Image (tube, rainbow over all chains, first blue to last red; front, side, top):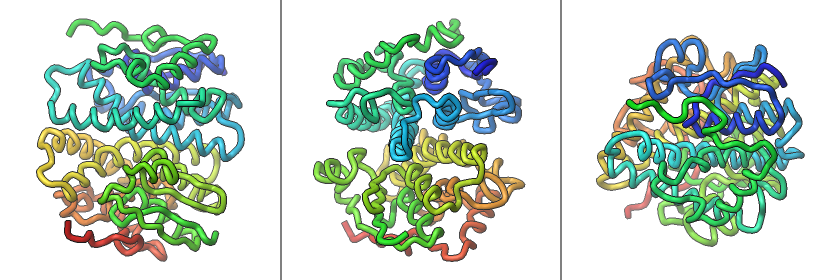
Length: 213
Length: 213
């Protein structure tokens, strides 16, 4: 794949999921920087011309334009024939964990980090709520990864690329050290990091560090 | 399809998504009641034998056992050849909205309703946070449905069955009247309700009304 564009920014774990997959399948792609922190995704032009859902990432591949990382990952797995998970049963298992990731990690864990790292004085009750949901989900995943190297077995799939999306950001952005507190998750993150060509989100997408605001 | 089992309970919009699809494809299925309000999904036996993710619904079809409604809907669409969305591009659009539903409606709107309807004195800050996310998502969907009858065009798909999952519960469970406040969503809910065999979640799954606690 060549001349693929990905609307993204460095601090977006969702964009990282797609960027990691693009690099792992050897696609030639370039980032289109989205100025999230100055409100670009909430702007009328972004919503009317880039993504009505008001989110990052968006993938452009020829006349294909896709948002939602789970859909982007599924599309890229189909097109490349890589990391999709094999037979139909395996593909459903992959989808099951991508959905879990969207529901639990993206909604709660990513939002917890966002408030902790990028806002001032987040609401205490909301943080407590998000932290409860986040740690519940982390516990489930840590248990799942005990005794198996990747999310659906012995080889990495888009379920891994989806679920690890927010987990390479530094502990200080969360206020907790996830890799240390959940050892099976920590070991699994190490295995993904060891894949040839792996890069940290801050080295793969534009916009880090944030300018002073 | 015959002898399908669905682990569910009446108040679960997620279970309703699967139940609605099962009835729309004419499957013969029976509910297995899960006593969510007394902690069954959080129990060790449920997590070790039914669903490690600790959630409802779970579908049993012969030797296939699946959780995550998005995966269940995708499986049932594949097996029945109905409501899946046609070609690959349409299937990706369906998946895109199922993911949006999981991220935005299930995480925020469903949780807002849960706290409002089924807990005492929910935390004000958390409710404000959830309400902001919920109304943002409802606005996006209302706009999307203005001028097109169903989520990905002129015919219903599993994206519709997924996204409507929590929206037939009565307004008092939310404290707002979603169908009235978002007219395009209201009209769309009317179109789904008009499908032959449609039933309300409280008439389709066991456990309503809740016993006094």
